[in-house]
Image (cartoon, rainbow, N blue to C red):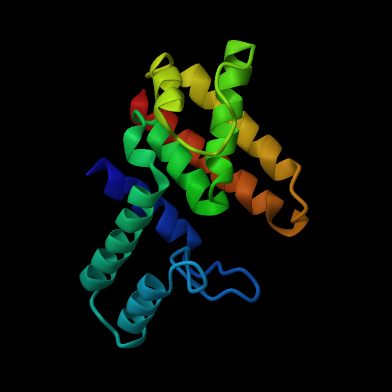
Length: 172
C-alpha cells in the first residue's frame, strides 16, 4: 500500500513531463523501459480506463522498484532512495554510500554503487533516523547542483523538496 502511494506521487508529478528527445509517459522512458512504456502508451492511446492505466503504471514501477534494491531499505529511506534511483540510476546508491560515510564522519564503507551487506548493515545503524534522511536529501541536491545538465536542475530540486515534505508529513 505505501509503495503504491510513492509510485502515484512520482508518476502523477511526471505526467506530461518528458525529456526533450526521450519519449516518456508517467516518468517511464521508452529508452530504458520500452515494454512498460509501450504498454502504458497503448492503453492511454486506446482510451483505456483510469484503473487499467493505473495498474500498468503500478506494474512498471514495481519492476523498477525491485531492480533498484529499495525494498531492502527501511521506510521512509526506501522512498527517498527509490525516487532518486528512478531519476538518477546507480548514482542514488553512490550518493547513499557517500552519505553514510559523511554522516559517520569517516569512511566506513566502500563507495561502489552496490547496496550490499556492508551498506545495509551501516544503514541499519540509522534506522528511522530522519536526520540521516535529511542529510541524504541534501547530498542528493548537491549531486544535482554538480551535474552538467543544468536544464533540469530546478525541476529535480523542486521534486526532491516536494518528496521531502511529503515524507515528513507522512511520518510525523
